[in-house]
Length: 310
Length: 180
Image (cartoon, rainbow over the protein chains, first blue to last red):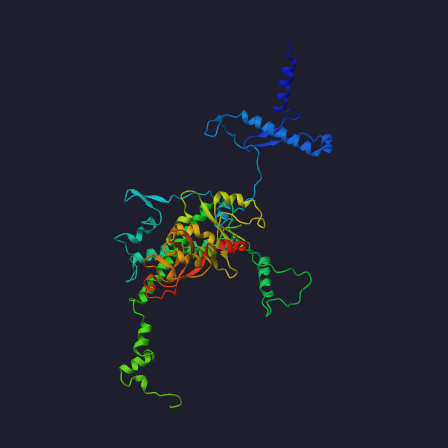
């Protein structure tokens, strides 16, 4: 029995499926990506580029699909689905790395002295109450002195010394100091060097003429003034944040409208009567002053007459 | 294509709120799919997050339209609603006006709604309130702004204007070149 023809047919079929390369393909199933590291065959490249590229693409796709069929599968309504492994190839970042935050004065100092950061808990244990209380905020521990029902008064205190008020003032001063430091830290973080300051001043002076700098003499090598670049939110950020800000905006708009309505109603308690129209009707078009004058007979304003009679 | 700034979204939201009031929240906070507003060449589009992400990869001069066009910003920064928003307005409208069959064609040619053509109107509609105009068979035809409150309309003569025309579905034909 001659089976060579069957074997040949089988071989031809396998040739279609199997891809043999000098260097095997690098397949990254997670990205569905195949990398061909073989050098380009110059002969076939120059001879027929289209066919060469098509063959390359076919081999790559064949290798990828072969690899996909080797993966574990799960059943689904649409047929078996391959479970892709995690991605191996490191894709480059789309955006540059975020800049590191500028250090605060304290952070700089702590780094120099080797002080490690200790995170404070929001809640602290209260020995007297025998429970956890907030360090600050609602019923905070920092308000304990001003909220206690009995407070010691120092011996040398003034007659009008209010211990609760004093404690509150002290606390408010601490927050104010912290806020001041925060603002100072931000100012320090922004690079306000002498050069940038000078440039800012120069830019201001250049547009501070009657023609807004349009007809000024141009100096040699003077650069064109650049305006402030508009900055918009990134398009590709998740929509959830946008939704939150939109809802916040809507609620603020709503509360604004309500406030407006309230003040409006406060001014006119009864807006069913059009006061202006009523006055016009009652005074027969003369206005409120005439109405007042008519009511008082010869009113206070009636004394003085027209033009030139002084 | 970019998200709206705060001022722009304020302009869009106030305009939409004059038609649909508090239902505006339903446009932003949707149960089915996240949707967002995007600005592309002074036009505001209301688009699902999925199609927005597809649209990112299209260059700005090549991107003609995506999602639903809600309207455009004029050069002076005012926002004007387009007829394409009608689907959403009709769905959530607070105040509605129904017009008689003999008034449909005049409205669809861009005229104001007269009292003679008024079929029905939502009770206690205030003056200068955004309303959606329906035919008597509840087909949305366009939208406009009321000229008088519901109470005041009773005294008017039949030729008086009840609703100032803002947009109607006839614009799909009349403004075909500029609408999208």
